[in-house]
Image 1 (cartoon, rainbow, N blue to C red):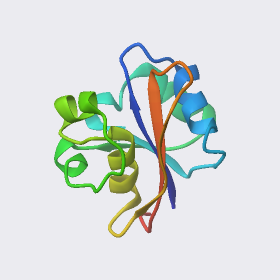
Image 2 (image 1 turned 180 degrees about the horizontal axis):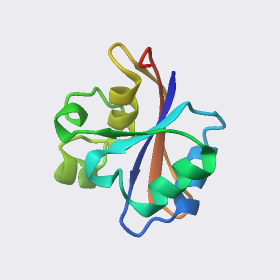
Image 3 (image 1 turned 120 degrees about the vertical axis):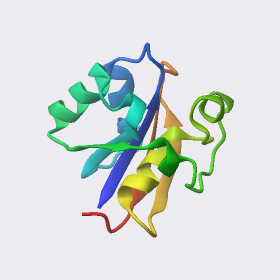
Image 4 (image 1 turned 135 degrees about the vertical axis):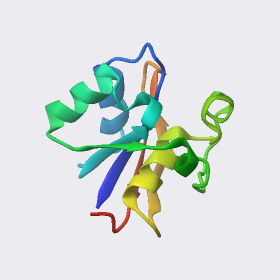
Length: 120
């Protein structure tokens, strides 16, 4: 299973999220983000547009994931240095690995990382 994990600012729109995903050039099986962000309209709109399920990752699962990149804002708000990477890894299941570290949308309002794992 390929999971696209997202981190995004409250001012992000569906275009911000979509452009961050498109930078990777992969078609995920699901989208993931922190539970606190999972009901944000732009995130839900992207999932519906792509016909993909959403995985809301609890904070306690985000903080234990081995991320590659570092955002001070993510660390301060969520306890992980990359919400996008941590969400992708957590949603992809035990033993998941990053296929691609987070990339930042051109408007700098969203990030997306890609993980692969055995989650069903």
